[in-house]
Length: 365
Image (tube, rainbow, N blue to C red; front, side):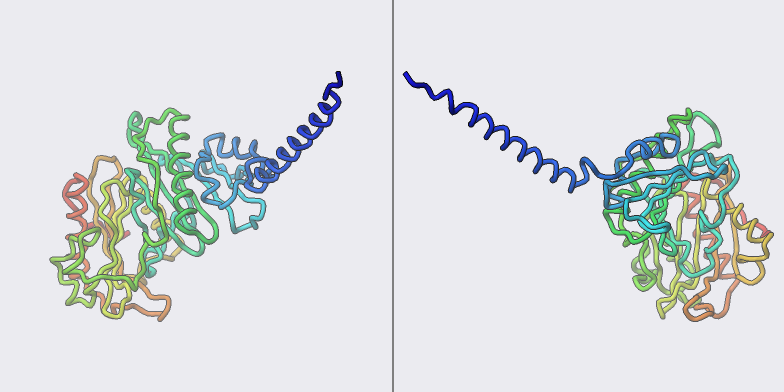
């Protein structure tokens, strides 16, 4: 009896060909999505920042999974590295992370930006939220997430991390930047024996958190965040009836409040710095003094301090702001009495919220 065994090789060959075709198509899909054959350098990313670089938000921050990394040659930091995409240029489409101890040499002002706090809203910072002691900042095409994690088992020491995203940003990329920076800080701290109280996974960061000077609101009717303490001051009579403020956050290491003129121009900036941020702010201003730049002499300001849980006193400052657009001051006449009363109200409110001691006016250096 004739069998059909002669058909089996033909069927087997057809199945094998179909399987190869499916595998080829699957490979193309995986390659196109960057899952395999991405052209990135996974080993370099694994080694980056002394092996502490968190990778959970990298693809979101850089809009790509085709990544490579390199350590930066900078002896001032515990670790520092840069991550790039295949298409990254030298200064765009890249993410940089720097880690340091708060007890080490203060970073350059180009990294922390504290020497621009008299210049409009250039030093604006929004709380990072989610239980993290950090902020989101932006200047000159760079978004930065900074977080300072206190070592609960090592008094007066903190792991400070800076994550810089170079180039354009949106909610997706900034959320990724926040995740990379905070989780890298946590991993590095634990690696070096610094026990920290970490926040929750970062979600929902966006450029809009920083606000715009044109989005100011009336002080008396609306202020309920970082400018709430100024509702009982004479701000309106001194030419600044509106405010640009940020949500109240007991964890943020930097607090900003801007008093805004009727023309929509920030006229006064009020700032509070805590812990490692207070230490770095003072170092930045001292460097500005030595270089004969910054607020000393040519700019109007007043300071105050308060002793908090940290050995580093909190620093509170008020500056009359300069407007680069007009080359002048939105508040034409600086009132020393108003400046001191406004700063006193702001600082006293901040100190109470943080459990700090009484506020003392600081001598100008």
